[in-house]
Length: 533
Ligand code: ADP
Image 1 (cartoon, rainbow, N blue to C red):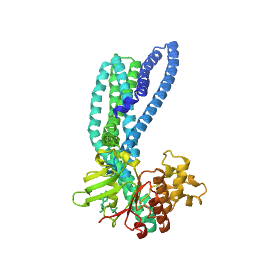
Image 2 (cartoon, helix red, strand yellow):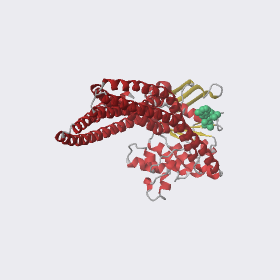
Image 3 (cartoon, rainbow, N blue to C red):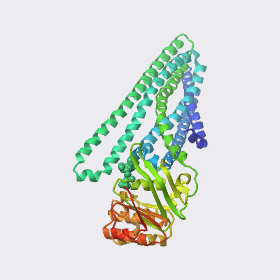
Image 4 (cartoon, rainbow, N blue to C red):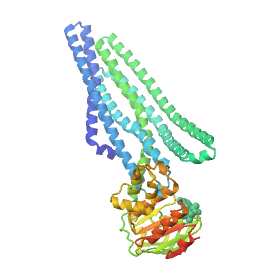
């Protein structure tokens, strides 16, 4: 987190300076009060009038400084959170697929929303607040020593007592806060799952069960949050009581000093006022310190996300596909006990067409993931033009291979944006891809054509239409290697046949079609068929 404070050093300095001015001025009010009371007691009317005027101006100035101080602090908090969130998001998205899928998307969502909020409130705001309170405390202490060392000694004794308590409670709070953060991730995950499964739940009449499940998570979340809140409340209760006690002690001690003629009534009032500005910050500090401590584990987790992308970026050569991609005696398993691929050897030459066939579950998708650098720790060799995949930059594979998955993901954007994915292509290239993929056929029915919004994950399109957009996405990129991962399965037979035919006719591309239900006629047009399983 430190680097974010440093990065915003200038604004931080401004915020801290304003906060020093604002808190010192607030402490200074007690001196003014003493003068006013003593002037009244001494019946000095002219001085009294002037002091009253000055006090009004002084208070207005405090008001202005405190406003600017607060605005600067909020601006700084906003900036830091924005930068931190950007880095955490980058880190998550920069993960290699193996790592990315180790955690659920809901965990990431929760980190970027719930956890960020925790950090904003319980860390950044709390730290800035703590600084302001510490300055106020120092200024008050200075004035207190000037007015009465004896009363200061009493207050300091109370101070030590008051700081011991949050230290003890803080440790418990850290544990509770970790639990809250985890529970919020579970809650988001379950919520996302239930909402995404709406169609299944509705068609099997399981909505009532979903309501019950949600209610269960809802209750657990509330309970876990309440357990943490209870501890915060205990902390606050104890600190409030101690503060009330210490103010009473100061009143007794100061009254005794007035009785014995050691101090004036004005000084008594100033002391009582100062003990307020002394204990109030301590109470707030007591509440802030455990908060700051409690989010440490959350910050550690988010830092892990922010750093994860960077650590994984391996420098590597630029992959090429001039001649062939080859699998030599490749074996792979997700876990030690169940081998998925054993001793696979295949060769895909540039410009040729290949079909890889096999029953469901035989490892076809795994083969694909290996080929595109999505999985590591395989045995044997995967060679791009004779160079081992492990020595190449995995991010550059996308420049060679276009993948058309069985499950197409469409963003809630227009058809055009879903094809371009915000990459630059000419209008002519776009038109060509739209024609070749068959997207143009269904666009004719849509009023706004390419600007038609497809809805959440393409909900406003049919399965076949979604697949055609996926085809257009691949075609516009003109990568030398196109992989159809049962990519035409959602299309009707005729369109599927037509699209596969077009890809087979395209001499420029190397096609690998991965399928478990091949069209026998099309199969004869492939240069080679590999059978798995
Ligand atoms: P296919 O594409 O031929 O249907 P897959 O390559 O998807 O088959 O899966 C091959 C086997 O590997 C299956 O038994 C599947 O359960 C398993 N598998 C796939 N992905 C994972 C994963 N991420 N972790 C563990 N096992 C997996």
